[in-house]
Image 1 (cartoon, rainbow, N blue to C red):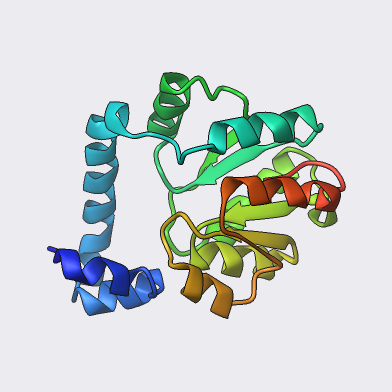
Image 2 (image 1 turned 90 degrees about the vertical axis):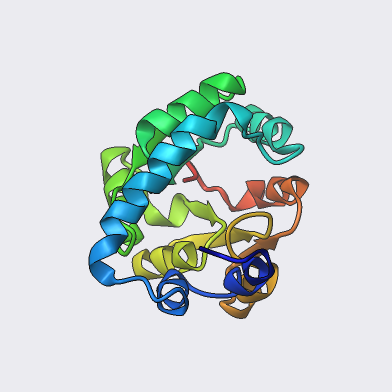
Length: 180
């Protein structure tokens, strides 16, 4: 269990550091991930997109930016959330089941969709998103309203740091073609 006072501290840690901090046995991680996806599915109707994000995504689409989702969450959960919030605007959705190899999923998405690496700005809210983008040599924008803290993201020097959804609009000139 995570105590409420631990939440802010954990947002500064990598996934591996969180696992170590919570003393989670490595062999239990798949079961924990499966349970989290199941719990997420039960509560999906109560979740709301970050305020203002829907409008910004629509503006990106209007600007001709191809947008997609790469997530470790279950495709069913993603689809249900998008449908519930009238966000069926993504060009592709890819669910990568691995926690450790997000770069593998990203590489697969790029290849499946014929996207050149220099045409991508990979947008994520985790330290592992920065790592995945760097392993593939793509630009990365970190958003501060998600999993990891703004401070921990900034310390990893992403190409762009977005503090509000509106900041995503400033990335439009950096999209040579599609975006993930």
